[in-house]
Image 1 (cartoon, rainbow over the protein chains, first blue to last red):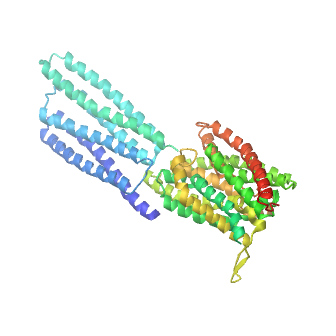
Image 2: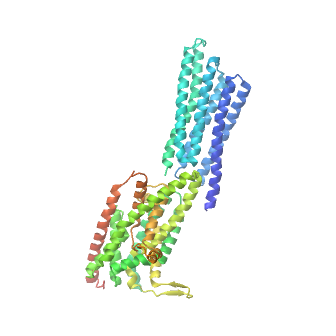
Length: 217
Length: 348
């Protein structure tokens, strides 16, 4: 019986690892996509957008598989609700990364040269927040004491992203270079979308912090 | 023989109630958190309770025998019946009751009725052990808690792997807990019948001796096992895995700590070993498994820095130390009077 448990849990362990890898890949594709868009390399941007769409459905399948196994094999009855909650909120990160690239692909906002470095910085901060929250999720499974460390980092990057978001919005609305108001509003929408990635990462981190307290012996 | 079995029935009933109530202390959390199936828990619990009772039950029973050598089966019947009624009554009013304390009270009631002098040394030893056993459990739990915490944190065991280890751990520790419960508590339910036992020793091919007392304990162990199978699930589900809500890993620590405490007060081998190396040996005394569990939970609370300390529970234990034996003694005295004067049975 123990061996049976062990082999099932080992398989599930690797599936969870694969799922977390998918979240990291989504974050990298998001960052690369934004970079290519800002550089005007639209072909490469579209490739990244396609890649993230495929990844999103793959991640969904893995998540469903994990959910099924957790319940079918009666594994970790105490924390499976938390594990599923965690995986589902991590899925929100993949979703928003995909959505942002989709909006760029559909709406093709015009981003002026003087805004590009701030746009890139905002995307990088959001991406770092995601990176830390995935590390935190890995720690939740293996190294519970480290979770709070990663959660703190997520909070830090989210806060930094908020600052850049505000600064960018001010630059847009104070700018004389961008003449039409509708264009300013359009840019504000994209600034908010990029910052929203870090917000989602932060909400995952908050859940993670609670789950970690629950799991502490 | 029929008379013997009729009078033994109160002991078997007490055994049944012990099985129904105390299995939750061992497997309650494991079952209610769905880490272990009830059927698996019940099988392991029953087997090891019987093994513990037959192999290692003599020591603690002997101490009870010293307190009151009940020589007539009618007396033994009333003593266990009074203890059983006291346990039922205390359970009904929601106090963490102990079969050990009920039976000691009942024996003292018999001592008063039969005007036998109470062996004060034995009584002090028994009562001292009651107080000491939750403290010892708390101490074990305190140490084991840090040990478990260190293993989980230092070895960075994956949540899922930890889950499988915990399940196996709960089964192994549960088996040990059941063994210790059988060894420590069989005296409570069968001890008073030792002097009136009607069995003869059985020798299997000169290899294995199966004494009359062991046969008696086998019967008692079986009664406990029936209690486990027929009623303990209900107790586990209503009480929610014992008196406290625990996580599977803390349950593992609690069960191990309380079982170690029960084992120490039942193990003849350990007793002899400590004697042989001229160290003070632990007395062999039936103690309360519920109170050992409460002690262990307190130990964990202390290890966590005193958070969630439930002083009300400590108060309840102390109340149990006093009320249970007094109630059982009074009831025994009254019932012995009726048994002797109404049913005209010899009770001493």
